Image 1: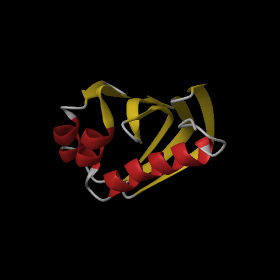
Image 2: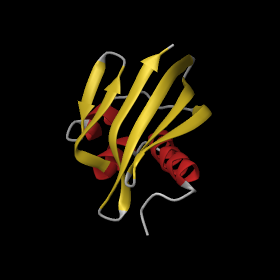
Image 3: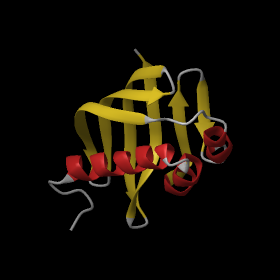
Image 4: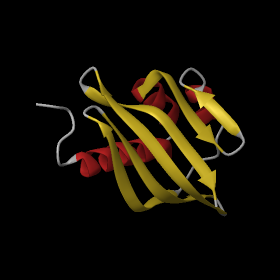
Length: 122
């Protein structure tokens, strides 16, 4: 049996919500350090964050209050990889963050890992 089944969209959406819930709970750095591939990157407006930099990066962020993932879509890359694409709306204090986002996941060592997360502000 391959890692990717017909439930891939639901699986990747679940993984993305796990990441956002960790960010809201103040554990974003730990989450991404443990789920990113060794060469994984977070490509954010004005900044690129490596796996090693993730804990300090998230520690320095003002807390998020909420988020929504709108219009999610999944692109299957192969039997062990897929990309989740969505429109992000997040709230941090009085700030509203809107971005087009994508996360590339690979199935590795029995779990889904973040290879690249990218956000483009809109």
